Length: 89
View 1 (cartoon, rainbow, N blue to C red):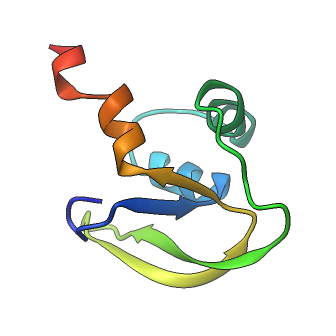
View 2: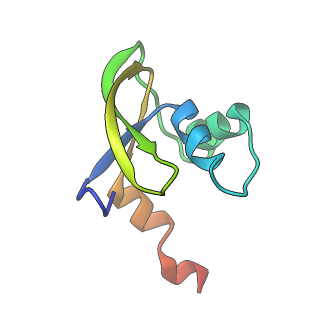
């Protein structure tokens, strides 16, 4: 979000899975959906809509591509309120 000066990000669980799979963390789509829906209490789009999907390239850079899916919208303010760096210090 900071690299692209965004206030919100749209993503499908598969987008998050693909991003996480580039790290050493291991997860599955069921766990990602649970976090988005139950833990973060986000709602996905009721039907497939167009959105700008983020892609992480092998060199670590990010870009956006047009995609279609039942995405979740994550606001930057939500992340700042719930995951401030100070909470982890």
